[in-house]
Structure formats: structure tokens, C-alpha cells
Amino acid sequence: MRAVDQIAIVALTMLVFHPSALGRSSFEGSVSQQLKGTTLTLRRPYEGNELKFDAMGRVVGDISIGPWTTCSQVRVNRVRVSSATLRIEGRRVNLFFDPIGKRFRDVASVQKNEPAAAMFHVRKGEGLPGDPVRIEVSLPKVEVSLDKLMATLHLVFLEPHESPAATAAPYWQRFFAQQEGRAFTSSETEGIEVYEARSGNGILMPHATYSPDPEYSEDARRAGFHGSLTLSLVVDTDGKPRDIQIATPAGLGLDEKSVGAAKAWTFEPGQKNGKAVNVRINIEMTFSLY
Image (cartoon, rainbow, N blue to C red; front, side, top):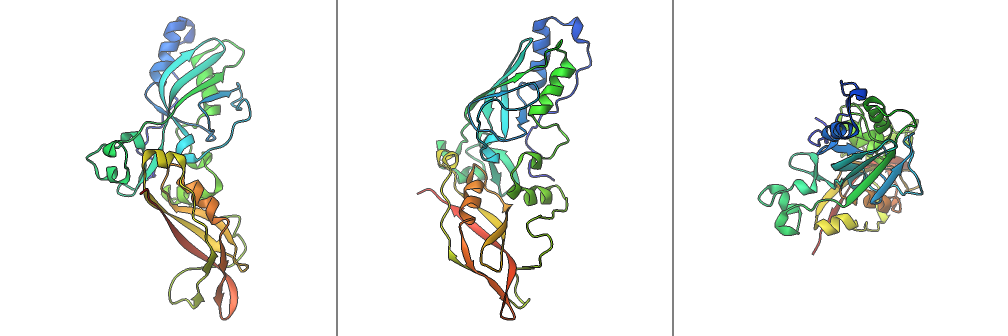
């Protein structure tokens, strides 16, 4: 089962009635009925409370890419449609990884009496809703129909059959591949011999010589979240980290902070028979608020 199976990612399906028979209010009402209360996944996790896209699905303006777990999904509260634009008002979905259910969850779904509430220190364990966000999508300069509108939305948001991996950075790819039962091969280690970190295989393990701690993400701090995550990486023969991948995530932007910190780590490389070799290791990072 995918780690995100329980997240209600909307199926943007084609409606079956003819748009010429609809007035504008009926048209808008039909679109709203399809989208309101659903969760949409952006094709790229853009930051900001105001996002605009052209009719080709390209973002308008200089917008930064944010963490996948806090910037990829939007819960739809309201939909407005005109002849030129579709406007969506909603909130960001802040995802954390629930180690009990082994899946991503919306922080706002956490109830104070459930086990996951112990991971939060605010509102006595109740989750905080994400920030408000408004998204405006320009529609094609032709007669707007429901199928054309939905086709334009597919340029901005994922379709139901698409993996969340399509929206995520390279260091998420191994995690999603494992969750979905797919094989994964990294281009960073393709063609080189990599030893696994385990006892009894004659490998002298790498040791960190410089290991700065990651920063707390603002979203995790605001939610009062504490937890841990595991990174998988290869220490090469020069003692540098390569192919950093998220093995077990935490969410709320902490994964990106951890990957950023791990890139600066240095190691005494692993050895086999007195010779430096490439070794894959796991690193656990823990986040706590005091």
C-alpha cells in the first residue's frame, strides 16, 4: 500500500453533460461540486499563498520550490469560474509521516486522543490547519467547456494515476519506489560497486568526521512536532556523501532540512582489505522541541 493511499487526492474526471446546456452559475456549481472538499496535488511544490498559472500550466512569476510535504497539496474550500480563469481557494496540507500507520497524514487530521497526538505539543495534540492559499489558473482562449477546464487543471495538478514521485525531488524517489513496489536505480551510483552496511561482510564502516545537525523547519516548529527520520546515503571513497535518499520520512519540511545538512557531512571512508570502498549507510536524525 502506498504511503499516501489515505490522502484524498481528487480524481479530476470528465463530466458527462453538455456544457452548452448550462448557465454560468450551473457551470461553476458543477465544477465546484467536483473539486470542493478534495485534495489536489500540484505538479511542483511551489511556495507562497498566491499562485498563478497560465493556460499551459506554467507558473507565473518567480516562485520558489518548497518542501514536498508542506507545499505539494491543497485542500479545496471554494471554486470560482469565469470565462478566463479558474480560481481555487483552500489551505495547504501539511503532511507528517505517521510511524504507526506508516503513511503520510494531514496534520489537521490529528485528534488529541489518538497515539499520533503524542508527536505534537500544541493544542494538546490537535493538529493545526495549513496556511490559506489561492490559486488562479488561466483558461484557454476558446469557449470554455468542462472537459477543456479539466484538461487545463491536469497541467497544474497531478492526475489520479500519477505517482506523487512525479512532484518530488530526487532524494524522495527511492522512498516512493519502495512504497509503490517499483524497482529503483539511482544514476548517482550506476556503474560503481557499492557495499551495504552490515556485519560479517568484511567491511570497515565509514565514520563521520563532520556532521552538522539539521535545522528545525518552521512548519514543524509551529506545529510543535517532534519525531525522527532515516536517510540512506553512499559514502564514497573520498569520504563524501552521494545518492542521499529518504528511507523513512518525518514530514513537515524536516526531510529537506536533513538532506541539506547531510550534504555537508564528511566521513572517514569505509574500507575493505585496507582499501577505501563505497558503502551505503543509514543515518537517523531526531527532532525534539524542549
